[in-house]
Image 1 (tube, rainbow, N blue to C red):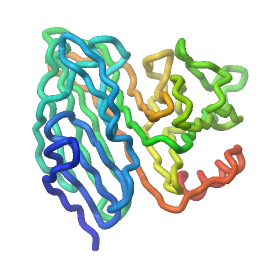
Image 2: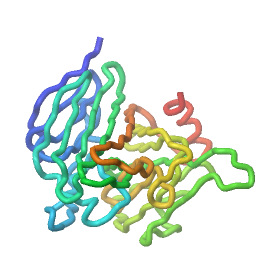
Image 3: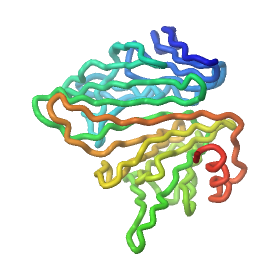
Length: 302
C-alpha cells in the first residue's frame, strides 16, 4: 500500500524546500521564499513546470520574481498590488498527506496567502486549497487567482462552454491589448481552444474565458497534466467574466484559474480549490474536436 512521504530537502537554486511524494510522483514546495510549488513530476522524471524563469518586476515593495512553478495571486491584476515580492521565508506545518504553507502578511496590501497542499497516497492527484485573508482595517474586494507555469513545447487544451442557452450567448473569449486573434499558435475549434507553445515564438499572447467545464489540460512529451476547479455560476469573475486565463511568451505558458470576486471583511478569507492529475503515455496525433473528445473520454471525464 502506497503512502505519502514528506521531507525537507535542498532543491537546486531554491534552497530549503518540502518534498511530498508517493510511489509515482513528487511535489517540491519552496520554504525560503513563496509560497511556490516549484516542481511536479514523475519521480526521477522531468519537471512538468517551468522552474527557472528570470522575468522580474521592480517596485518599492521589492523585486518580484516569476521563478516558475505554481503561485497564488489576487486579482484583478494591478501594479504594484499584484507584484508584492514573495522572497522571504514562509512557515509550514504538516497535515494529513501534505503540508500547509503560510506567507507573512504582505506589506501594503495587508493580505496573507496560504496553501494547503495534499497528495493522494494511491493516485497521481494533488489538491491545493488556496486561502487569502484580509488584515486591512476595512473590507477589500478581490479574487483568489492561481497561476501554474508549465514548461514550453507542449499543447494546451481549453474547453469551451457547452451550456444550452437558446438564443443567448454561452461563452466568452477575452483578449488583451497585445493578443492577436490570428496568432499562428492558437487553433479555434468548435469545442476547444488549442494553444501550441512554441519556444521560438516570443510574442506575448493571452486570452480569458468562462471555463464552465472546470478543467484544462497540457500535453507534453506524452504526459498529460490536467488542472480542475469548479466554476461558480451566477457570480462575478474578474477580467470581463474570466474564470480561466492563459498566457504565453513562447518560453513558458501560464495556466491560470480565477475565483469569483468577493468582498472580504476584516480578517475575512476567500478560498480557491483546485486539483492536478498527471498521466503517462498520452499522445494526440491530431488536435481536432474529435481526437480531443476521444482523449477527454479516456483520461479526463469520469
